[in-house]
Length: 322
Image (cartoon, rainbow, N blue to C red; front, side):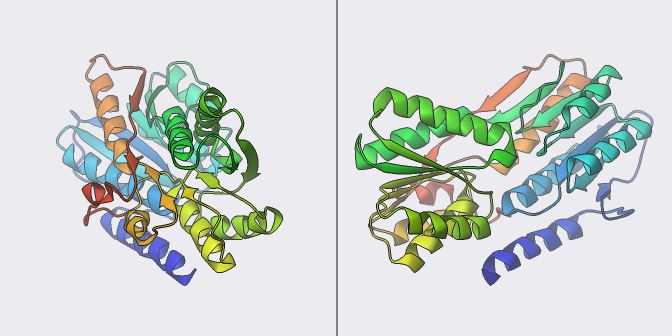
């Protein structure tokens, strides 16, 4: 558990060192050298509470710097919808031409719609919200659920006890992944016994919640987890309980630490649906395309890839911050 905290703290420190121009704890970055012929781009991201989120902010900053000849930018991080709303207002006052937002919390629909109505191009990253005129770049959350169902059925067959670990607080991400999973199970293995529990996208919650799940369920064949960090906590709970009945544990995200665990387990298949935080670069590119008056797809879905011990080496990246 100490290792988990140190990883996130290290990522947060690296990210903070990369960013310049901090005015307070929430306005984490703005670039220098403003000129009148540059587009103004605002980036709204959650505060660093998860390695994947830290990597999103890292890649957003990297892409913004690469485009510094064309844009001036400000990056804000926030801990809740109220704080992100205030930061969005600040970007509007600053004169943002476009905003790339990663609105992880409910309640962002109204402020984002207000920005769009003011003529600002808004590109959501990852999260689907109900706002007219918003663009979105995301991984294939529904497809991740489909891939998880196919993988589990391939490994355990069409009968057995499968735990679904959903994360209601993540909004459309969890909803779509769960829907894809359930739809595919209904199609290919309707006799599976599905048990649904709520958790969060952290290894600490994965450990705590799955320890309780193991106590109340003496026989589990597979676990549909929606996140690599959660899965690492689940794996620790399985090991500490000495359970040998679980044959499959899925994940999602592209976490290098989780990839490296895959070959260490012969009796349990560890799977991850690749969901790279570098996709935020595509969201920034869509925003710039719109500012230039070019056409862009309203929704850009980046396909996922299944990673397990048979191919994990192809996805190891020593430069990845996640």
